[in-house]
Image (cartoon, rainbow, N blue to C red; front, side, top):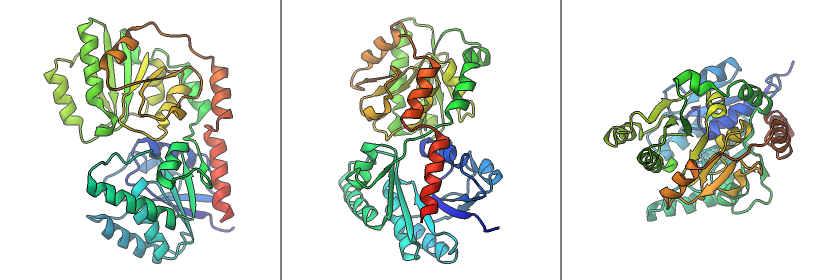
Amino acid sequence: MKDEKRVLHIIGKMDRAGAETMLMNLYRHIDHSVIQFDFITFTNEAGDYDAEIRELGGRIIPILANNPIKRMLKLQQFLKTHPEYEIVHAHMLLSNAFHLLAAKMAGVKHRISHSHNTSNGQFRPIKRIYEKWALITNRQVATYKIACGELAAQYLFSTSKNVLLLPNAVDIEKMMTVSKSSRDYIDQEFNNNGFKIIQVGRLGKVKNHQFSLKIAEHLKKRNIDFTLYIVGQGPLESSLKQQVRDKLLADNVKFLGVRSDITELMASADYMIMPSLHEGFPVVLVESQTAGLKSIVSNNISAEVDLGLGLVDFLSIDSTDAWVNYLSESRNSLPTNDEILDTLKSNGFDATTNAQQLMQIYLSF
């Protein structure tokens, strides 16, 4: 029997973050006897998904270097000595330029650039110069382009023409089955019968957790019985926890770290908030709509994330009061499970279908 075709994915670390979770949703549904995934990471630290990747037959290959140029040269050398990788699939936005340039120099014919965001969030002049170089280089060295949505395509590729739009898919039926049986999950897990809000994402600047803590302050001043559950880890964790202590919010704001029960938390929360400074097409918003959870999101996020189920509303992060007033209002009626299932499938968010589409792309090379 012929060996499976191995695709090399370039991603910093396989943690439970948006692009990584999307990638795992696809990986679980491909035929591993035909296509296999391996992953270049840039750390020796274990990622959240590493164990599962190895169980599925994938490899984790760390490349350690202090700067992008050294990483590029090491990646080039690795690819030269591993000619079995005929496809390199990069997921790191502007850094795709370095990684795909390394692949080109190593003679890799098929170089996929995948856009997962609508901005790099950098505004200093030196960063703008780097951004311009990276965008031009990425467009020149990529032989195939994929994006999670129209705006993500326009940012990295300047157009959505000749770009495959591959929505951030989830395992719809599995999530909906779990959701149905988890409506009281937070009440049972945390002994909480009050108003439940969750925020899911890396504890970094772009997710704007400081704004979330302002919301919590205002809710507390209104004597609302609530708990904000913050799910995730990241560089701002210590400072955010200190802010919670300083603001006397320890009874109302709980840090849950990285979790494997995101579906259960979503199914049993009252609202999810996402006051991000910018995003691409967050997979967590596909998950929240699959779970039937109402979400309030920053109007900096692409309107594409609203799937028309009445589960996503946009507010400006210029006004904390607008968010607090919204959360204080009574909850609207929710769509039925059949409506959710039909909408997600018809809009291309089914992981099984998308995995088959991606497999056919790989096999066509």
